[in-house]
Amino acid sequence: RVHFGMSGSCYVDGARPAHNSKTLTLLVVFDGAGSALRFYDASCAVADASAARAKVAASAARDVCAPAFDRAAALAAFDAGARAAPTRMLADALLDQALLPGCGNIIKTEACARARLDPRRGIASLAASERDAVIGHARQFSLSWAKGARPALLWYDQTICGACGAR
Image (tube, rainbow, N blue to C red; front, side):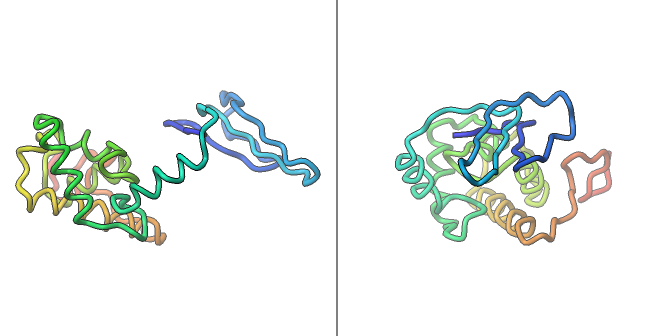
C-alpha cells in the first residue's frame, strides 16, 4: 500500500522527479521486463490485497469519483457522521474518506463554495438540503474534472471569491 500524501509521486522506468529533494521510498523492478516503478516521498506498507479490495468495494457507493456513486448512501453516511460528531466541521467531514471517499482538498473547497456553505460549520447544523447540495456539488465537480473539463476554481487558491467577488 502506497500513500502519496501531499508531495509523493511515482515515476515509471527512467523518469526522474522534477525536484532533487525527492527521496526514493520504494523501487519496484519488474524482472525480465526492464521496467521499474520509483515511488518518492511516499509512505509504504504491506497490505492484504483482498481486504483492501473489499474496503474499496464497500465504499464505492459513497465515492464521489466512482461510477457506482449513490447519493443516498453518501447522505446516510453524512447523517451518521453528524450524529456521531455533531460539532465536526463540514470541511473535516468532507475530507473523511470513511464518509465520502474520493473527496480531496480542492473538491471540498469548491463544493462548499458552490453550495454557498461555510466549511467551518458543524455538520449537525446543516439542513438535509444543505448536505444534499454540498455532496451533489462534490460529485459534479469531481466528474467534470475526471472528464478533463476542470471547472473554474471559485475559492481554492484564490484571493478574490469567484462567486461574489469579495476578498
